[in-house]
Image 1 (cartoon, rainbow over the protein chains, first blue to last red):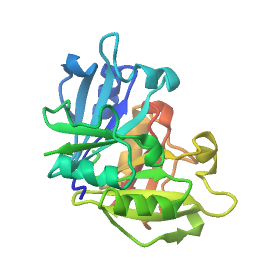
Image 2 (cartoon, rainbow over the protein chains, first blue to last red):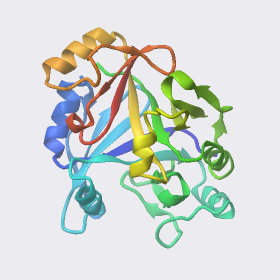
Image 3 (spheres, one colour):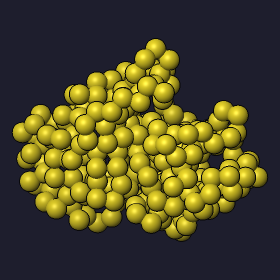
Image 4 (tube, each protein chain N blue to C red):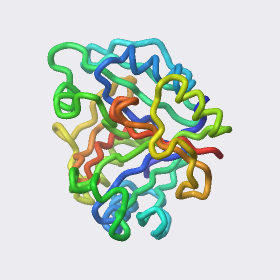
Length: 134
Length: 134
């Protein structure tokens, strides 16, 4: 069912500093910062030949990553996103196998304009998983 | 400098259960368990079209992930591995930019038989980064 590893998201306390480290120390190609106010984050993408890393800092007062950074002030790996062809079929299979979908159980429009859902980290070894229909 | 995203490693408390979840709930292709006693872990690989996920549980009494699982008993994302062409050149660049290499600063032979080094998570937003020469 799951296809490509779409991205790994890392929550960072200072996006400009993180962007600079990935570009300078790791020699990576990094996009310009992009504000996603409806998702409460500002992001840059580290472009790799086969996937990408999303570095994100909180934007606004109700950012969904504020709590994460309160617990881990220096940042950390936040979630992994896998691609699927049919998000409703994926959701139905996951629920049938006992996995919990966050929110009301229905796909939302994700940060990249595609239908996404998030799975409860307790059902996947403490790892927050995003499923994106591409 | 960094090339492909080689793998994302997830520490899990119960490898058989985790393997089953990735195969059944996520419909992923998962390898047979493999003991790596010299690295203190038992692993399976979740094979994705563009990368892979390494699920690992502690093996032996001096496993390097025992401490991680004591802090996060349900598991969690442990590290991200990027490929480089020349690990000594990569190390020299990283050190020149102020990043700290774990251990004695020299590449070791990693779990896949290739030269690897690990970077201090405090220098990369709480994310443990492995660099592997391929």
